[in-house]
Image 1: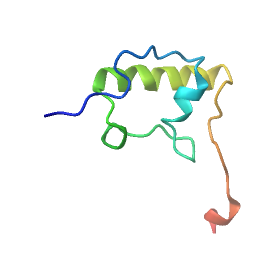
Image 2: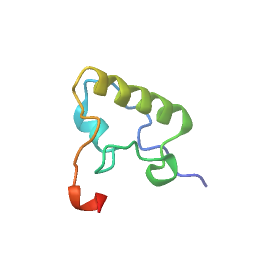
Image 3: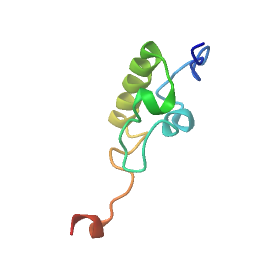
Length: 71
């Protein structure tokens, strides 16, 4: 039996930064489906909402920067 999508029945909105930040890594990248278990349809909606939230400055493009990682 397949697992149910955790976002099933949830309205994905770009203004809901609390929900969107759960699906972003600590470096600001969108977490892939195979980690989150989100359906393809909802993953596309989620990615679009995250990109919109970044464009209107509700979410940062990069969450954290550690200069030690560049060495």
